Image (cartoon, rainbow, N blue to C red; front, side, top):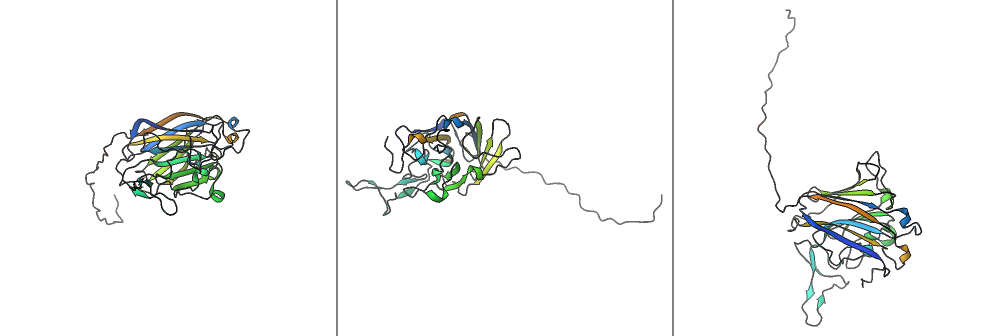
Length: 296
């Protein structure tokens, strides 16, 4: 399969994207999902600089559209961003997508979601945060791409978070978090998209405990209140190995995924209820006078 020039992968690279479509959810309410993964040391012990990244996301698409592997980790081609559509010329011969002088696609705004709302990546190379063509926002290659990084992008592909896992302090007295993607047992990650899409909590639970620890909380500084299809949202997962190389030796070995679980509100009608209470009865203050020298 031919990919854009900025994606460099060997012919036998492995990349997957799936969207759970059995149920769709209303993102005006909280959506919580989790899964467990197992990525043993034996999967990369011969190549310590292995390249593997996996993501999870919520999306309006019931199947991947223009899904790119490599450093995009299943993202849509940046030529087509969420809530926008390419502008085409009507010229009978020179038909195609209109570009700016810097070769960026001219986009028309829309009120319909057509891709990921939020995407969370765990990337051994950190390249998911990298800036790219067609004005894809991101960070510099030499300065801000971190090994074993947590990277989060929003609906317009803006980078909301980009940090090495070892620098993310877990808010727990019983867990120290994790600094690499590898794990000797199944590790469970939980994601909570809450408060009308204004906040994202990421929790972690190792196999030797039943208690989740908060890995990080991200304030989502955007609003999708003018978008019409927030009641038809799905949850998905993607993986790619390697990330950006033609050397298949840098691919990781076995990666195991299980117990993909989603909770949320499935109806389309946003229900609101105003709760009122009766007036509280109040006993007014009664002035008192202290009397002394009284015997009984």
